[in-house]
Image (cartoon, rainbow, N blue to C red):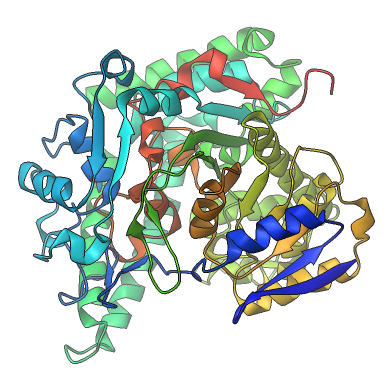
Length: 567
């Protein structure tokens, strides 16, 4: 059973499955005037569009004019421009949220507080600070107000949900104590198997692959540059991208080749950790030695798709009609943030690690060729194995939503954008099918959802989803699916403003869910370094789960299994 409902002109929702009349009326009200996908642009009453992601001077603004940066400043953030990683400034509060919550403090994020924050914060990236713009012209004149007590409650709501078949909770906590302590070390080694981190031979092999990928990136940027002139509309964007990527490549190469006493010490500490796990696997939550070996043979990148990080929070902006990302008042109920990582077939090294599990290697492929041409089809059982892995990931996400009492998950097509880049053409359809069918399979179970709202992405992917639904028996669904074309963030805000309990899926990665750097480049990222996760964190309270603010990743009481105890 499916039908289309026109909410208002140009805003049509497609409902699959049975829905109560009262629930449908409530949804129609929530969808009214919710804006379409913003593309991370900001637009208010003046109708001029601004962006934190672009470099064109007439349409961008100082990177410090991001709501989350103002929030941290109001909490007393220590700003000394130190970097946790290249492009990721440290976030340090002089007082913990629990200490602040003992008082009656309140913060208000508005145009005025943004102006004060920008004058007090040093510039971590001078090239990103180029626009002198009145904050109210960009973000509007509303105020987001919240107490210290409420912020502390949000931080305490955070949970890590693990697929224990791949990632036992005790092992997650023990590993996270290292990955959140030595962030740079594990970030540059996140594609190495856990067992081989700290061993020189394997590190050199990975370094070689990474440098080859970085070289191809640099060559592609240079080639693009030969086609650009200063008259091109996006020339400044390209110039910024090229120079920032070149700087990043050089620094990254340097960090990979470091051979210092510090690196040697961390190598030793990591290898001792691995030895301890192998000696007593059950103490770390493994069923047996084979279970332990299987997990240790995986990298952080691989393990990140066995985890969902969840926390209640608020978006500080909304999108109504043509307005996009305008400051708004705190909604009556919070949004549950659901951060999870799809399977990465994008970068060179991760593609080789992941692709070799599921696809056959072409006999004619040569190392100098693109990785997409490395594969010629599915391995025997490869498609089924990929589906089961995706299903386990969505079980983590659904269990996280259930724990937080989510009634209206607001979902995106995770894993079906850049992460598909190196999947061979002959396998793409089944890969996309695996992501959608995994969700449909789990929606046959009761998770407490009233409606499952999904924006399936661009038109071709929307049609792909509709084709799948045409062959699916909607009578098996425990809740209706609502397919729509609205901005998922703005929809979540609209639902929360009506006292409902929405969840928001944030497609993430290992840096966030295993190392505590939620939002990744949210603060000073631009261009390709300011996309969905950055926009999510820059406009919400999500950074409260960040390492140095929260102990979420290393608190054993907050890391829980995806399966019910009776499963």
